[in-house]
Image 1 (cartoon, helix red, strand yellow):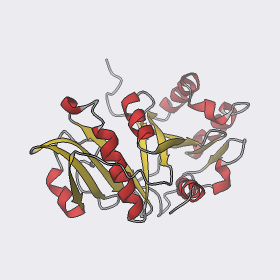
Image 2 (cartoon, one colour):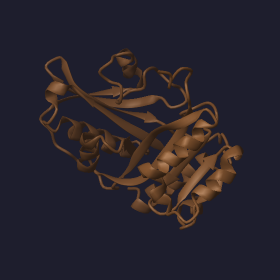
Image 3 (tube, rainbow, N blue to C red):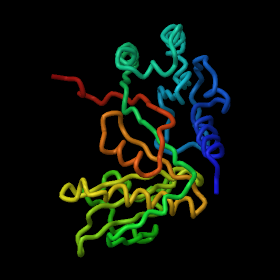
Image 4 (tube, rainbow, N blue to C red):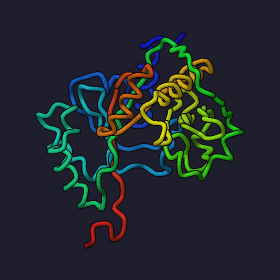
Length: 257
C-alpha cells in the first residue's frame, strides 16, 4: 500500500509541473513567483496558460503569473505569510489589480488527499459500478454536475463511477476523472431527497478504495463554504492538504449594469 509520504510527494510533484517550480518550492517559508508554462504533464483544465495561479500547502505561497504583473506581485507578497494571501482582504487587492488586465479571480479550491489505509466500508445500499465504457450514457444529465464531466474529455477522462440505487432510481453517484495517470479526482452528487443518509460517504469511500486498488491516488476538492462536501471528504478518509486558485478572463458585459 502507498504511504502518506508517497501521496504527498506525488501531489507536490504534480503541482511543480503546473507552477513551473521545484517540489521544494512548496516547502519553505518564502513566497515564490514564477512564469506560467504549459507543462505536458499538467492537469489539463485549460488549453492555455492561466494569467495567474496560486497555491499553498499551509506555509508559503507559490504564484505563477504573467510577467507583466510580477513587479506588483513582488510588492503585494512582501512581509505576508503565504497562506494569508488567500484571505478576502488580500484577495480584494489582487482582484483590483487583475481587473487592469481584463482578469478576475475564479474559484478557490480546497483540496484533500486520502489517508493511505483502505476504508473497507460495508453497506446495505444497492450498488452499481460503472466502468469507463458504461459512463457515456450518463453524460448530459443535469443531476451529475460534480460526479462526471459534462462530456467525455480525453485529456482527463471519467474512468470509473459508482451509483446507489433505490429500486431503479439513482440516489447518488460518485465518479472520478483521471486528471493524470496517477491522480484521479473524485466528485459526488446526491439526489436531494436522499441527503443526510450517509449515501455520499458510502459512495466516496467505495470509490476511494477502488481507485487505490487500481494503482492510482484518489483526491478530492471542494469550495470553502461547501460544508456538506467538507464533511463528506473528512468522513470518507480524506484530509485537507492544499489550496489552489486561479484567475480567469472577464467576459464581455460581465460587469455591466
